[in-house]
Image (cartoon, rainbow, N blue to C red; front, side, top):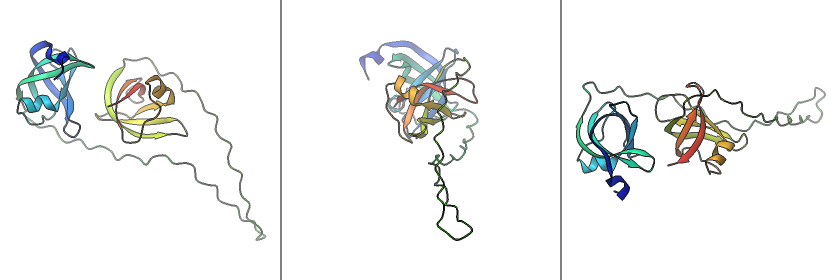
Length: 204
């Protein structure tokens, strides 16, 4: 544990596990006083000899200020929910967009040489319209796809919700050149719940 995390800012705080992904080794808890959320790492569970918690588990813990916000540094007790949460069924991801197929050749009626259609002119790129103002939220997700031709992509959130749009400008503002399909990211999104747009994307 780093020196920074040894500086406990709150003790015996009650919180509820928002989500925890064993394959990732971390998750988040929601503080009972409504002040926000705190990061929970698997090493803290191991130190307390606790199994991976399910959503809704109530914990009594100590908090410290980590590099990216409040973080759980010790757990004193963990109480599973009376009713275990139902497993979430995620919709199947649609196939990644591919380049447009080559236009088929037109066969003349007289049986002559087939006529090759001229390729369509490239579409003019349109600037992304400004999204309606709204509170920015930090979340985690996985890059569903990033298309080099359109220089845009989508992020699949780890929690329930709509996919998050991002483009080349977002990556540049975040200090990134490119992201690969399947990479896990931390992102800051704005806009409506149905059409969120990432303002910042970070690799994790």
